[in-house]
Image 1 (cartoon, helix red, strand yellow):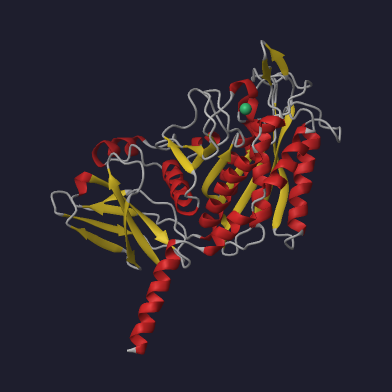
Image 2 (cartoon, protein in one colour):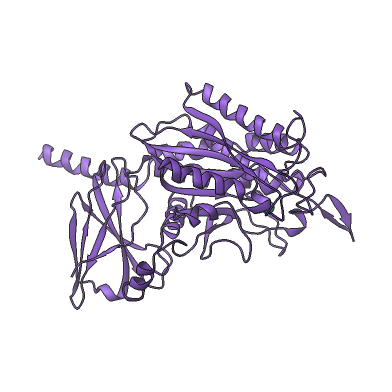
Amino acid sequence: MKLFFNTLTLLFITITTAQTNQKIYDIIDAVSAERIENDIQTLVNFGTRNTFSDTLSNTRGIGAARRWIKSEFETISSDCENCLDVFYQKDFVTKAGNKRVPHDAWIVNVVAIQKGTKYPNRFIIMSGDIDSRGSDTMNFTKDAPGANDNASGMAGTIEAARVLSKYEFENSIIYVGLSGEEQGLFGGGGLAKYAKEQGWDIIGILNNDMIGNIKGVDGVIDNRSFRIFSEPVPANETEKARTMRRFYGGEVDGVSRQLARYVHKTVKTYMPEMNPMMIYRLDRFGRGGHHRPFNDLGFAGIRIMEAHENYTQQHQDIREENGIKYGDVIEHVNFNYAKKLTTVNAINLASLAWAPSTPKTVAIGGIVEPSVKFKWSQVEGAIGYKIYWRDTTSPTWDKSRYVGNVLEFMLDGIVIDNYFFGIASVGKDGFESPVVFPNQIIR
Ligand SMILES: [Zn+2]
């Protein structure tokens, strides 16, 4: 009887710890608004971080800014027994052929890699931008503090590195400051290409661009909501994949969308006070960000940002006109909100870096049957798998069933036509991979 009780208790503990994990709450508590404020101030103090600004001065321009970011990552690394591999990744852009490039220059990204203990070649990436701009993106000498756009994202990325470098992860985490965002997404393009050449297995990129403004141009003040932008399906998908979708679904189930759902779910679980808004589009209407070059190559990538922008405070020279104060100055940044969005990143980086990989193949069948059958490929390190499904009109995976360590399963009494389905792998501490939408059909 006692043995039976103990088994039950153990089972109960296993189930409850699979729901939430204390380490994630510890990470939430460790993120500091004060350190983020200090870093934004330091970045603002470089006067301008326009990609084409001075690179020799130690106090002004993008050269000084990137050297400071690199040294900050190196300081973090020396506090964790050199757990970060810090380096510049750069590409050359020329004035010829680029209408927003005032002169030839190196586009220099600052990369810090926290190597995974088990899968060093599998990466989850957090990015912010080093560069800033004023009203005229070609003007590289005028002040352009870029406090919110995008010192906030850069400071958040550095802070996430400080917090997460205290832990060890099975997968690698990359913290990166990208450059050349404002003139053509050059830095993201360079790093995405580099990732492809290096054969990096990329889980996804969380691109942070403007995470500190809570007073919107629409008059709304909101320090709880934020946006997660994701494209519906990969931009480089094949014609065959497009044709298959007409018959089997998947119009809103590409890898980036699954990453967006993952972030949404983690936040709902661990930060219930927040209001994550999934936005079903690549980016804001007609505008871009540094996740896009990754999406272009088929990598999962999303943009995390404030819910309410203020256009008088971005891409504007500092001035006053008709009683309106223009400019992206530090006074408009809410550090506590930037801390919350940094925390959103940190808990998702950790969850993904502790999770097993996704099943490579997921097959589904059940045409004219009262049940749905699944078959998927085994994932190293997974202790089990979870089937997710949802109404076809729902944005989130609302229903799930943990099925244990098996590689096929039949869901009885459910008709395949009325839902979308997917499979996630589950690791030993309950950390899950993103959901995989079926990529094969069982006949
Ligand atoms: Zn911008």
